[in-house]
Length: 109
Image (cartoon, rainbow, N blue to C red; front, side, top):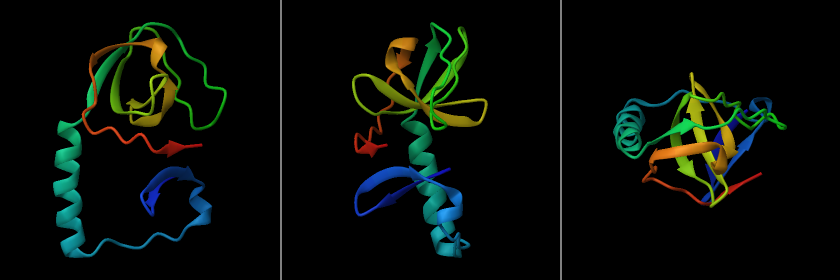
């Protein structure tokens, strides 16, 4: 699965439904600048309860793990990363230490 943006909408889609193109040099520099800004906008949380995913795009959580919060989808869900794996999970399962500042609330499944 990949995440992408199209016409101001962000969502996930199967890798085999797209063709990937190499990044041009000036695009690479722009990408790195965007990446640096994104890193500053990340949040943090500690997992309070184990969460077993029901869907492939959900993130498994284990009590005590530290989660990098990528964005708050809505009041009930976050998108985050644990051990280089990304997915969504219920906000009630974590204690938020720092909210992500770069929220995009246009995520749809």
